[in-house]
Amino acid sequence: MSYRTLLVVALVAFATCLTSAKVAEASFIVKAGDLIRLYDTPNRVSNGGEFGYGLVNSAGTPISSQLRTFCCEMDEFMNFNTTYKIASIGTVTKDTNRSLTVGVASLYRQWHDGLMSGANTVTLGSGANSAVYTYNTNAVQRGKDGRALQLAIWKGMGYNPNLGSDAAISAKANTWISYISSMNSSSNSTSDFFGVRIMNLVNPTTGAKIQDQLTAVPEPGSLGVVFCVVAGAGALARRKRTR
Image 1 (spheres, rainbow, N blue to C red):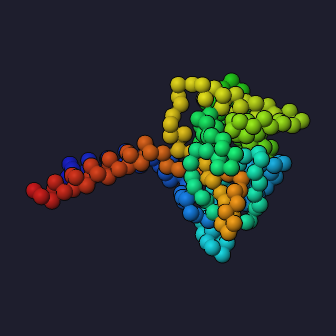
Image 2: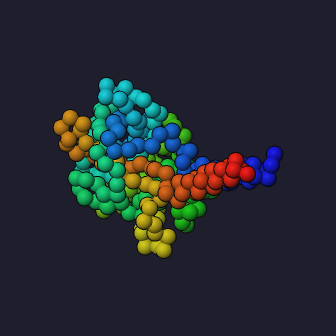
Image 3: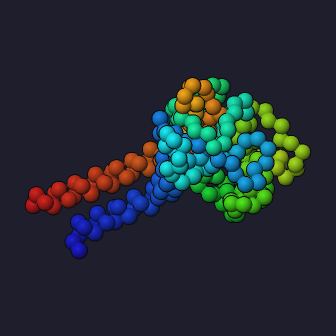
C-alpha cells in the first residue's frame, strides 16, 4: 500500500472517529416537509415525554425506525399514532414563540446520546447519583426519569411546571433544571445548540399547529470535518492520477 493510500485511509478513519457519535447515532434525519407519527413509551408518567417518533408515508405507514423525543410546550397537544407534518425545523416554537436555550439543548443532547447513565452523569454536577437516567426500554424507572426530564425541559423553555409529589422525580428534575441554568449562564454557550432543534409540527390537512418536539441533527462542526477529509482525499487521488 502506497504512502498516499495510507494517508487517505488514516484521514477517513480520523473523520469517522470524530463524527460517528454525532452522525451515525440516528437511522434517519428529519427535515421540513417530512411526515411523522409520535408513539407512546411504556410506563410513561403523566403528561409529556419521553415519546418515540418515526417517519411515515402519506398513508401513515411507518418507513423508518423510531427515535426518541420530548415536547417543548406545556400548552399545546398532540395525539399518538396520528400523522403530522414537520412545517419547519428551527430554534423557536411556532405557536407559543418560545426559544430553545443552550441549557435545554445540552441536556437533551446528552440524553439523546446516551450519556446520562452511570459515571457519565458527572457532567451534570454534584447530584450525579440522583441524575442517572434509566435507558432500559420497559423499566418502570424509565417512565419516572422521563417525567423528571420532561419537567426540566419545560422549565428550561420558560414554563413553571408543578414538579409533583414524587420526591425522587422532583429531585431529578431539580438537578437537571440547575444544570440547564448553569449552562445558560456559562461560557460554554454555542450558537449551534449542540445540533439540537425544534420540530414545528402541524396537521398536514388543516395546517393547525401541534405540540412541538425536540430532535437532534448532525452538528455543522462534525459535517465540516467530513467535508474537509473527503475533499482532501479527493485532491490526493486526483494528484496521483495526473502524475
